Length: 269
Image (cartoon, rainbow, N blue to C red; front, top):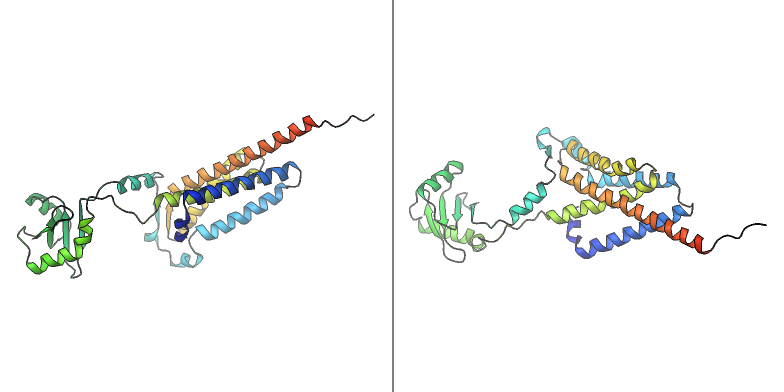
């Protein structure tokens, strides 16, 4: 599933939206011509929802392995925005475990005795290094004295690459934007099918968010993460699908009315 995120680009998103628009127009045209039945639309919606549930929810094999401690719910639907803001914050300090098992802490600016003591209260660091990126760091021991040459060399070898990137924004492998865009796009077809499957606008609007809640609840029950941010993205996609289908239906209906007005049927004698 994560590999799909690498194909979420502006080009692929535009192509997907164009394909969905064509899909909406085809359904609207067929329904206007009395060839599209509502029961068939409901059947397609059910098959699509079942496929989504199998793909998006946690694998069935993990249900028996679920533990209560592994279940987690992200209640803040805007947590992804907060993560994006954190990515923009430059990294000026970080800790790292060395190959020897020792811990080293780096900061751009030298630490005072009080700052070093506060950090040691949180983690038992063996080395403290400081210095501007691109320069040789000053390496100290936990007491603030110059570190032995072997410890200094170890820190420089294993932390040198990370220190050189200090001051740059954090890079995230989570692909937050791509993930949310994908979650939105996936639910656009559901919104389109919901529009044609139901006559009630309330059901059309609620179908997508309701199914998204079922998917997240299934993930939670299987011991995975349930994210209200995903529900928000899915809801946006579903509502976009309903709006797209409604707009396509209105466009097709308007064109048919215009054609009828241009070619009136002759009156019978």
